Length: 355
Image 1 (cartoon, one colour):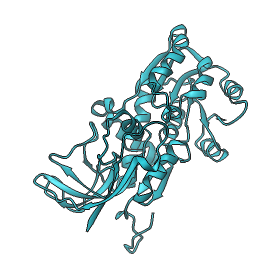
Image 2 (cartoon, helix red, strand yellow):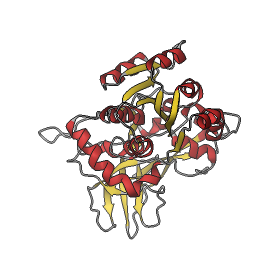
Image 3 (tube, rainbow, N blue to C red):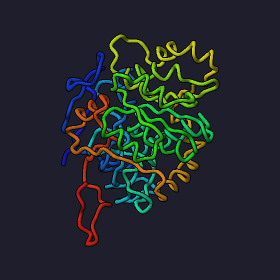
Image 4 (cartoon, one colour):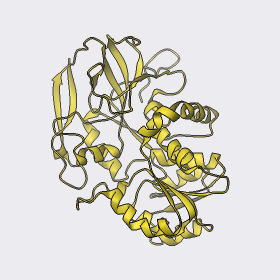
């Protein structure tokens, strides 16, 4: 049996991903050494930051494309893990991978066991994983919402955005959600947000101003560009911004750093209105906040106070195409690749349920 792998074919020159950026390979199945385990990828997380890694050179040509995964242990030589365990790890864009000693991990993304009885295992790379912690850290920890605050959320129907919207509602804030299609706007309404605005509208800036009669106290930034331009004049004195991402700028071809350019555009308003801008890097919050987050968010999910929408796509071979679609905003919710069967999904008679 062989492994199938997507490797980075070249350092992307500019713009959005294209087929030539990736190389599909059949490789020898890895064997676990001492203090290692072989795992089978079940779900693969696709996230905008992965494109930044490739364009910046953090990920080098020939590297396995990075990605967080939920996997099943096939052969364990690692203490504390046995065959059949379900784990969070970083196999990346491949069908099988090694975890353990001498295997590179992505900073704070250390492997851990997943309890399938607590929640669907896919949530470990979504609502109960780094995605959820990103929303929690940016809104709750950095921006400290108060009842009555107006929160504006860009890319609100995306994986992080939809969680921010619901947390804002729980914390007693007025939530204004920005998205594109009517389908996404209707979904956001179902989550209980106070107002929705389409960035595709010809009158977007005016509609956003109308949705924020008292201005904006907290802005959760996922997009940049024209959306940021419309939010900027609405920022109140001592407002707060969580700078999570700038997805509209990830395909830029001028070589400028998107965050530096974003700050330059907003600098005059930031200074005049004493705006607090927080760069949001979720790895900075794992050690101090992950346990608190899992307890609080887990309770919200179990109580039905926070819902989550997953955009599941099938077939590892389709990953580059789906990745590009996500960056263009063609996803709806948290984007996951279904790489292989989920062994925890069975009917009452123990038969496998297709995802």
